[in-house]
Each structure stands twice: as C-alpha cells, then as structure tokens.
Length: 142
Image (cartoon, rainbow, N blue to C red; front, side, top):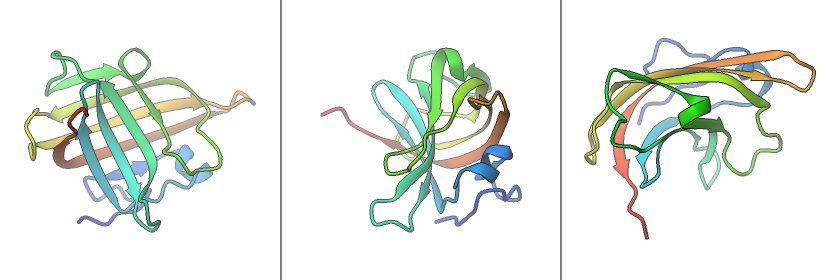
C-alpha cells in the first residue's frame, strides 16, 4: 500500500489545490473500480473503520472510455465526497480527467490525472488537481 497525503506531488497519487486547504482531503490509498455504469477513482482515508472516501472522481463507463483521452467531468462524470463527511463540495464549475493508461481487466494498471474548479456560494473559485495510479478492481453487478 502506498501512503500519501493531500498536497504531496512527489508520489503518483496526490491531491493539490485550494480545495485541499478548505476541505479535509487526507488519504492513505487510491483505489480504482470499474462498475457497470462508471469508472470510479477514490482517494480513501483508512483511519476510519470503514475507509471513508475523501474524494471520488467518476467517469461514465462507455466503450469509448480509453487510454490517452481527456474527458469533461461536466458531460461525462462527477467529483464529490463519500458518505460521512459533514459538508459536500461546492458546485462543480468545470473539470476534466485524463486516462494515460486504461484497461478493462482486473488488476490492469490504471494511471491518469484530473483538474476541477468549484464555485462557492460566495462566487470564490476553489481548485483541485490530482494524479492516480492503481490496479483496477472490477465490481460485479448483483
């Protein structure tokens, strides 16, 4: 397991930006899961018994999802927090995710990065960017 904290840009898994200064985005591991409907990149804080998701980035799972492509988060995805946090992120203004390496088989190594801008009710902009690398977990539909 790779242990990294928010704001650490030297590791492949990182979160950075002004959103990190306002929200607790500490995480211990990054996991990447493929569901029937979406690809989910999760920055997980394992200090809790349930492993709370500090930040979750999703992209619609379509046949067009592939390596070396950039996807608009407003059109094809979302970014938010897992359950258990007191305050959600502000409204997403813009953002993208880039998959540098992507495969659809269990244990395929997935790498990429993202950037997003949020607008607070006071019209302030908060940014977050991050990098991710992890082996893909396939989550079967029940």
